[in-house]
Each structure stands twice: as C-alpha cells, then as structure tokens.
Amino acid sequence: MINKIETSLKTVVEDIKNFYRKEQHHFLTLNGVKLDDETTQVQWIFSTYGEVDDITMFYVDVKQYEVIPSVVEILPSAIISQREIVDMFGLDVEGSTKGLYLDEDSQQMPLGSCGI
Image (cartoon, rainbow, N blue to C red; front, top):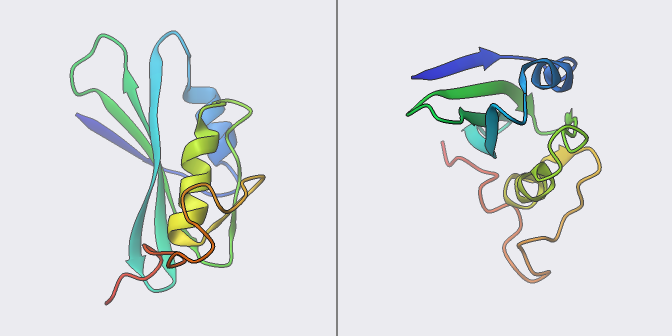
C-alpha cells in the first residue's frame, strides 16, 4: 500500500517532522519525476519497519525556479538524495550544492527535460 500525501514547499518540512519516527520509519529516498519542461514532482518516500509494502510518500510539484527546503535536520542521510536532485534535475535544494555525481564536462541536468 502506498499512502500518497500532497504537501507544499511551505509545509513539507513540518509535515515530515510530524510524521517521521526514526524507530518506526525508514527514509528510502528523495525522488524526482519530471512532469513537463517547467514542473518536477519531488517525492520524499518512507517505508514502515516490519511491514511489507507499507510506503508513505510526501510529494509536491515544483517549478524550476522554486527552492525546495532541506529535510537534513530531520533526516541527515537525505543530503545525498538532495544533492542528486540538484545534479540530475537542476533544481535548487536549500543547502545542497551541485557536483556530487556530475563532472564539470558532463551533460548538466540530464533528467531536467522530459522531452514532451
């Protein structure tokens, strides 16, 4: 079962903080899905320990120019996923620098265009 929770850039950090319990939930990843040339859906995905296929996904649709708040204060391991979103989609995530996966001479934002 996937529980999808729509959130907003203004409330996502608080929403995740209210939901997440480290003894109960495993942070799987921060994911991006390109919806069109200007919009990417950003997804924070969790599983529940001891439960098969019990997934909770917080999501928000963001425009290319918007800044995504960092959840590293709550989920320190999220820094890797945040930096991946910056490199792969060219999105701006608070406190996350570019250059984790891509060399300077690599194609920049390889997932930043959906080809629609």
